[in-house]
Image (cartoon, rainbow, N blue to C red; front, side):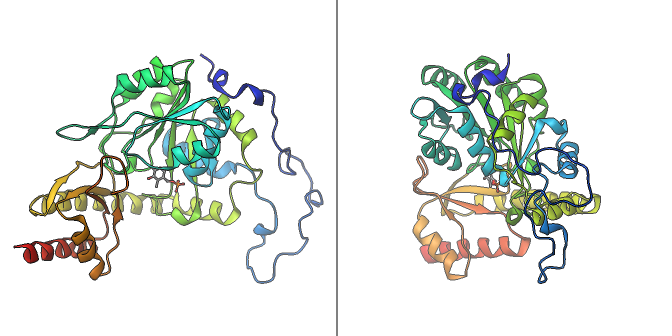
Length: 360
Ligand SMILES: *Cc1c(COP(=O)(O)O)cnc(C)c1O
């Protein structure tokens, strides 16, 4: 199956913008891009004077090595948010095609769909006794019946933190061959016991994976994320992307963050978050004000509370801001708490324990 058959027909043959950096050229006096011949005096670095490589080879190789894919299966974007937007733009004909999402879930998929005038098909997660679950058969059925060109799954899921297995995702993708791309957002997979689905991309050409340096790698401000997919899909999406999507300072930061010593420290921080997540889960479970905590494989916990307003106030009184999830479907009593440092987590627990005493 050639996944390019799922792309917008009206974009076939579209070559995008040819920038001064599109073609490799030789020379030592570069007067082809109307750049300034002098560096900005306020800035120490000379390199930022030039337009950057559209897909810097050094970062492509580093990310491909980190994620275990080929460099030509990887598209670097301004966060995985940009990759989500590109997917929707390239695969959904406005006013006709649809995007399938499984709420409650990360909001960007539906936002990008709205901006593209793509319909949004919703197959709600089912709140089973042990966790939120994806209704696989319903996803496949709704995608087929509603002309979904993209199915967004999130694993670990935001906001509950549950994971999907390789078998499940590959099965959905196989059943949707020739119908839709299945995109698995793995923004939090570094914190999970289960491994990434990047390997599945080799097996299923209509499967794609989103990864980001924003969370575990502590680089949210640099805006570096990527899409891993069939090389033909990556090449087609490159044509739809802005000419210079990787700012030079972000490239430098990303390469620093992917150096062996930095990766070692990242792994240690991830391990600490996982330990703290387990500790927080256990400690919060003991508080009567907490109705339910979802088992999370990410760096946050979704909790249902007897009185979320009072919990928010109590947390705010000591300066702690958590995410109010109550506007989301099925989450009318829920907050999402990011795992912080041990000291920060302790303050969260204190604020929620105080609440208990007031209620008693
Ligand atoms: C945080 C997050 C992202 C990351 O987006 P970036 O643009 O890479 O910062 C992607 N998906 C989900 C589900 C997230 O929670």
